[in-house]
Length: 160
Image 1 (cartoon, rainbow, N blue to C red):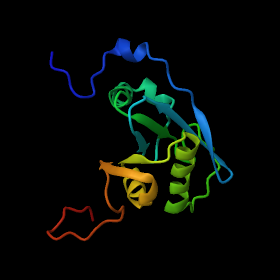
Image 2 (image 1 turned 30 degrees about the vertical axis):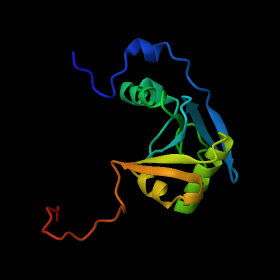
Image 3 (image 1 turned 60 degrees about the vertical axis):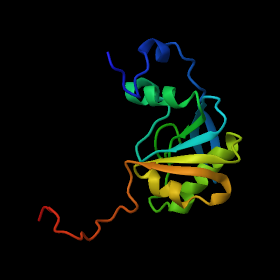
Image 4 (image 1 turned 180 degrees about the vertical axis):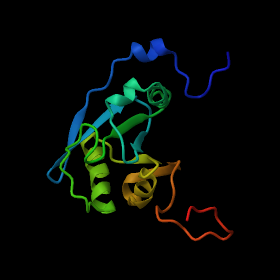
């Protein structure tokens, strides 16, 4: 049977010791995060809006993804403010800069001075906006540069 890049044997995941959920202080909020792996560099997974670091382990695809990344990096995952195990009290006017402060708070709490950022979905623009001083690299996955509808060069299919 051909195995995909996300395939990790279920018994490997079932027998893994799950990382402890810790909390970083960002302003007056507690941001939940987990660290797994012990590779030579840090990778911060900057998620889109919906996220829960503890439930990742119950989703086979997410658990396999984490399992595959962990051998070659120290993977730092966190719940964005208002989601998962992070504090639920969130101002709806939270800015991109405030969300990046959360990323920096998690990096500081995890002891990461420099990390590559993997921006997924809405986390893509966040990862691009981080200052180069604490970023060793960045990648976007399933992300766009902006969320507003862009004007198309060619006619687009739109619902009227």
